[in-house]
Length: 320
Image (cartoon, rainbow, N blue to C red; front, side, top):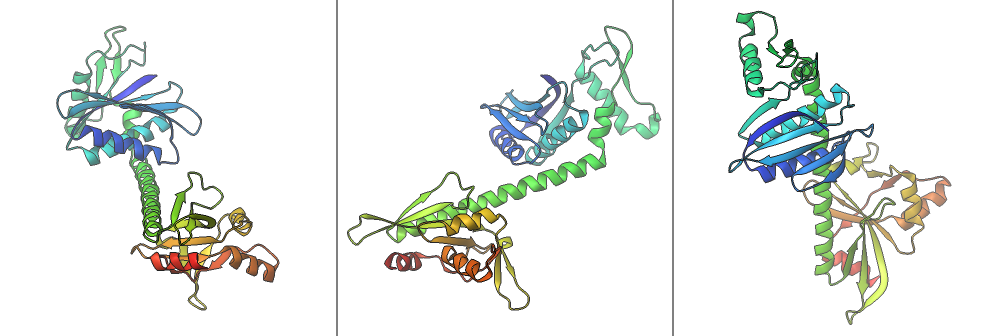
């Protein structure tokens, strides 16, 4: 691995590091590979490895190292570095970016990084006065000049890359927000079913479109084996109002989910929580069977006429 950059950070390091790893994990271009307490490896879309490592210094201070496989294109490096930098800038009161410079002529690392960074910063602050010639530093090995304003610095400062990283960060935040809403709905479901005196179980894998199940108890408190299956959706985007009749419409984005719901032994409930926290549910297994029989082709939309999901409605389904 090659270290390209250190970031000196002051602040709540555990929180800064943990939230960074979570945000990186929820991007679409970096896949989490291996995770340790203070280091995390990720993979690019082409399977190249890159990552971050936190080293603690004084109380409340530390350095975050960003490292890459040597073969990673510089454009991908910049996106990763910029993502990390923007996150730390948002979370930390004090952040100092430290570059690792290597002589392009002989490959020797620049010995005095602090001097190099200070010289570059002075040039950036006084470019107009000093002229366009970019700063360099003498290589101790080949005695040639190594540029400090190189391609990496140019790309790091690029407005296009800043915008690209901003879009990636916004997409990551949206995914996290949706997951948070889904977890809130799971919590609502578990607590409501428990208050109704029934059993609930969350499924770890819901690729087929079922997230939880409710198993009903009899009057003696014994499990009956009679169940409801729940598909959970949180957020206002799942329901659209149809203009011609103001009906609320849920679109089935994956046709196999509809087939899977219709094939279940027990009723399947579509449970939707809006942004105001209101939760409603509707039985869709039998609804889909009826509509499919009418149209004789796969149904892609459900006219959602959900009732309030609460203790009384759970008990009502139990009594059915």
